[in-house]
Length: 309
Image 1 (cartoon, rainbow, N blue to C red):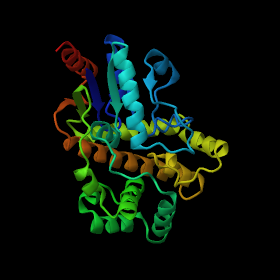
Image 2 (cartoon, one colour):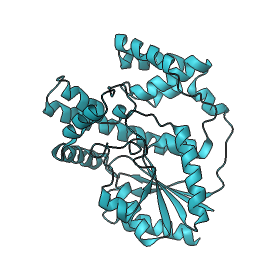
Image 3 (cartoon, rainbow, N blue to C red):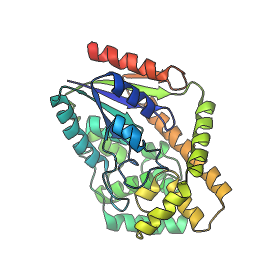
């Protein structure tokens, strides 16, 4: 059995390449994106529009409300089920996205990590409210140097999770990852990584896309989310998606639209940096320049060759 991982940082052209491959090959697309699972979050997540989804359906999109949570363990369970169903239909699973933890969970499992604990999270949130997330990052660095090294000081969701794991288990996340036994997937996997030959150009793409999101009504989308789901806060899992927390703070009057733009672009660039760090650490990856004007055809050729081989 075969499967394809199409990975890359935000704004690298993953969706376009995947849809092109769907139109030419016998594949089905599984989204590997922690933001796309949420309903009613469309503009800020760069979710494929209805016309594209009708042409090339994506599994694992619009699954839960923004008030719910979805974990890497949930993803692994859902993805394994879908991959088996797709294979049974005589097609090949094409897993596309930029949530690298999901790819890691799918390949190796996350059985060594505990479930979320709301009491521990509340305690950590209260501490962060007092000292700030950069200070929480320093605390993590004193406990788990390896995990802290790959996180930015303002990456509150992942910092919180790493500290939560330590609070619950007494062991660091990096130690648990090292101890877990590999749960090998029963698939031959082609891993394609879309990486930029010029980081500056990717940054320009990110800025242009965020500006387009603002023009398309991103702030109004977040305003509507607050009205539909009154319990949403900046600490909600869905609102930790890049751009949404900044939009909430803008709507709360903390800063104007120009600063929202700057903060949103900066946060998205930091996300891309983390994604590229993950990709550099992965084995057996075929790299493709995401800035190549023939990107879609290059990806198609590599996948077609893999399928035939």
